[in-house]
Amino acid sequence: MTSTPADLPMPAPGLKTDRVRVGEAVVCVLAGDLHTGTRAIGDQALNEALEDGPALLAVDLDAVELFTADGLNLLLGLRETARARGVSLVLVSPSAAVRHVLDVTGTAETFTICSTIAEATAGYRP
Image (cartoon, rainbow, N blue to C red; front, side, top):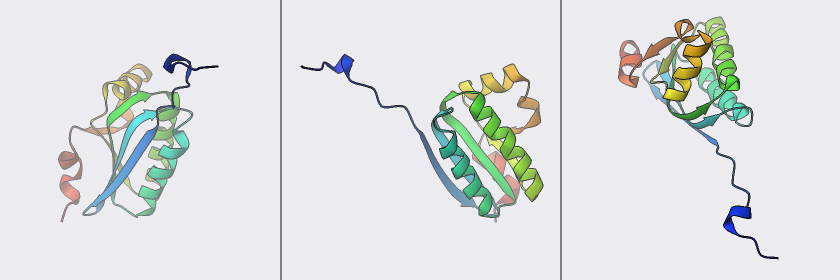
């Protein structure tokens, strides 16, 4: 039996994460798809960023291509955890997919949103 490329399973799009400290801020970059299958990856990355003890956690969402209710719930939970730890939270450059979910659910107003990392971290750089 021979398989054609159309018969082969496609790998599930993933979520890539990165983080960098900028003075008293930590910037966590999420790229790819944020949904049920990748939520644990995002959760781990964001919790590790909080463990760095920043005064500000900036979550860069510019490269998020797919954003579901799981992604929104992750951000809402992060907001509460950050608040409990006294850490300011900022969303940076939400992609069209993220912005759509925030707007449709009416949750955009619950977050501070900045256009750039420089804008988000302006008061936290040495």
